[in-house]
Picture 1 (tube, helix red, strand yellow):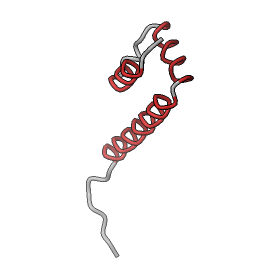
Picture 2 (spheres, one colour; picture 1 turned 45 degrees about the vertical axis):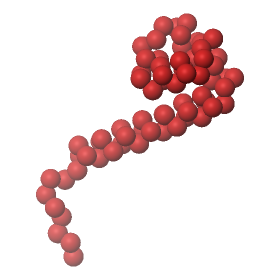
Picture 3 (cartoon, rainbow, N blue to C red; picture 1 turned 90 degrees about the vertical axis):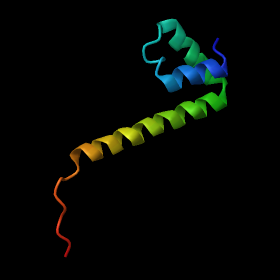
Picture 4 (cartoon, one colour; picture 1 turned 180 degrees about the horizontal axis):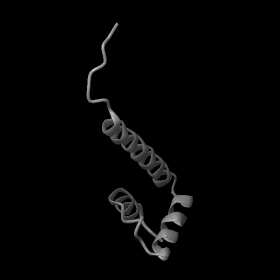
Length: 69
């Protein structure tokens, strides 16, 4: 079973995406038990979505300023 410090490090650094099935299972079990890591994972996922939306907004922003009326 993972400890909180290890779980948060792997989650924040993106190592859980490429982790083995066993490590992902340990992380899942840890989140079931630990409410703080569950909250951290939820906040981390929300931050990822916000940053992805902002990045998409920057890439699709108009290059010419619009005339204000």
